[in-house]
Length: 257
Image (cartoon, rainbow, N blue to C red):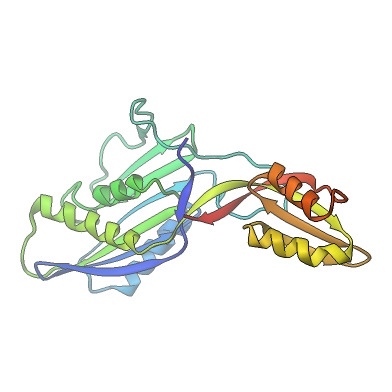
């Protein structure tokens, strides 16, 4: 299974081809409604642009698989899987293109993932779909891309348009930080105060995420770790075997690549 990926945040960039300007916005969106809000915002930000072409991939359940849920029930299932090209499991939701909306919609009900693309007046298949292909190629989800075009006076042809729109999204993503959703075990470490500072410092130094630190009658650290066994061994070595971390659940964390 290809790990779930998304972007860290909004990216904007501009490219120019034969005097036509392509203003790209790529942003996170947990739902179809959020994706459409980003598209509408881009349209309002560049009202003079002739086209506002778009593509997005979101979770149709409305749940953001990248949301940190450490404060809720500490066990969840992965909602997405990557499309297996051999199985061709994506089915066309619309059996023909809506000429008014110029929007293709694809959905994989097995994975709760929706893909949409919109040419917004450009020749069919020359804008939204090339943009969607770039998003697919980066294996990212819960993401929306909008490219606003200012015509420069020279026609680019269908191939040129496809390269321009896809290239604008690719350029924006080249400036992005990607995050991978990874499972982390949640553990509680109860310590004497004399050991707490040293143990916490050592854990942080090894990339352990400290979710909470309580210093009352004793010190209690709640941590998210990639390897529970190595954490148990480390804490035991630091406390001469007096302390054994307790596994309490798991969460999914966004980890920069």
